[in-house]
Length: 96
Image (cartoon, rainbow, N blue to C red; front, side, top):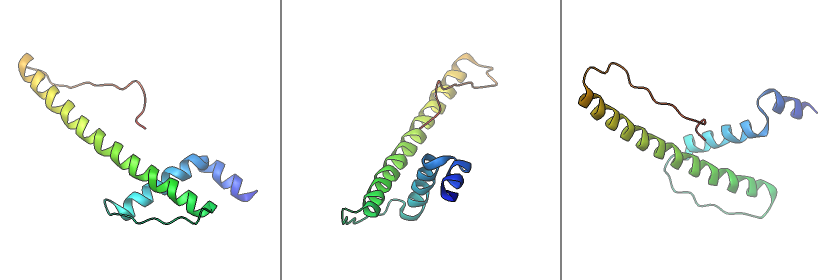
């Protein structure tokens, strides 16, 4: 019962999964990982966390690349029109 209450207070299992992925990324970064599975629950959870961590890390890199491209295009267009003091951009949904 206490574990369920703690999970709901801190965002549930989804939040816990995100935090675990962040910790995995922080620890292994771009290192290669040799993974062995016994087929049990714990090793299966580790496999899923490793996969999600790598996928999330790739998405983060893609967002950085796209963001840099947006900035370059916005700067070029601002120079064309001259006198622009602000750049505005919006997203229809939060990043995943």
